[in-house]
Image (cartoon, rainbow, N blue to C red; front, side):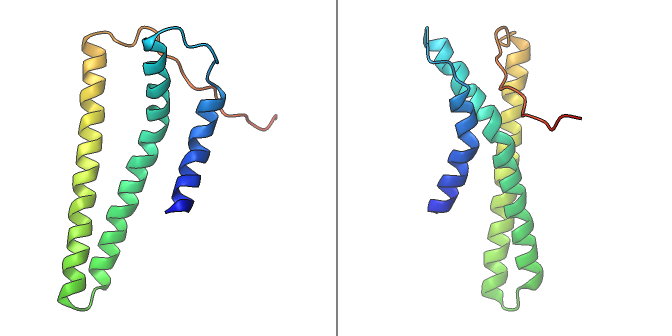
Length: 116
């Protein structure tokens, strides 16, 4: 679990490093948190897909009933996690579009690329 925390922190560090040192108001804090969540959400969805596929493989390879039941629970929770994350993401985007809340959206800087 400690390794997962280190990996997650390594993905969050670029967002922290690119943050400006002056926070003027509460909206700047919300914007900063939104940028981190926008970076982390696709990673969480990818992890849920991997968890779902892992459960499918375990279900196909299970020999006894106890392992099949555990694999079924893994698949079910993977589907629930995917559904919740994607539906909440969609609802938030609908609200942002409806109420025009995307006025001062800040993006993370693009990743460096090898010169051609």
